Amino acid sequence: MLTDYEKAKYNRQIMIPGFGEEGQKKLKRACVFLAGAGGLGSAVATYLVAAGIGTLRIADHDIIEPSNLNRQVLHWDKDVGQKKVDSASRKLRQLNEAVTIEPIAETIASDNVSRMVAGCDIIVDAMDNLPTRYILNKAALEKDIPFVYGAVYGFEGRVMTIIPGKTACLNCLYHGAVPPRGVFPVIGVVPALIGCIQATEVIKYIVSLGELLTNRLLVYDGLSMKFTELHADRDPNCEHCHQVERSGN
Image (cartoon, rainbow, N blue to C red; front, side, top):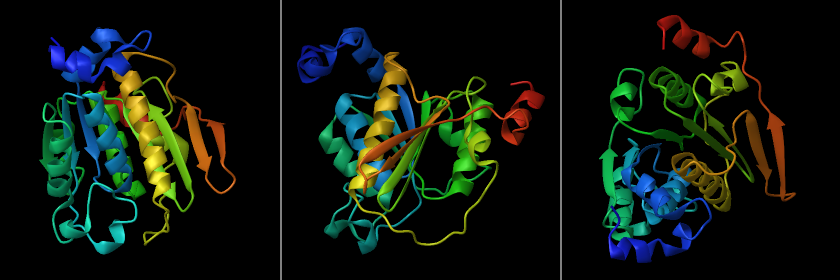
């Protein structure tokens, strides 16, 4: 049920053909798991909360450092030294008091990810490393929860949406590859843009509107200002997909 205030607040999106009040109710009932409260996470969280998502569960174990502030816009100079989930939660609750924010100040790992994502309708990857993304990918497949992948590097970014059992997964795309860990360059506008695309995919999925980025990797190059779309096929030998099939899920 939407209040009169909610109808007025979300009027511009309710006006979209196919969205309507029923779409807004779907958003209000939905629970999103956001892995990461950094650059990508700041954009994803801000626009999902502004759109009226019902519950946003955010997991991040990191502490804010000055080097985060060029892109992680939910965190400010005065927040340095604080937990990212605490800083993000404060800002997001001010942005929309009606949204339930559930912060989890833990490292995402194989032994706790199932608990973290339990009850969520969709998982959003706002991480900065492939090993954790593979953990999320496997959890999404095992729990049958859609998964929106996003990544950035320098002036580049990429996004893909995964529907378990129906589309290519992250492991189908990268075949278990793990690049060297380390500090990588990034300009703040890129996670903002990629995070907004991820948030758009979440809203479209929940409201059942449009065409998702399934079996399609969208690649953005900010220096040439070009978007490139690469087709992604399900890998018949994908270990992640096979593990789920063998388990009977």
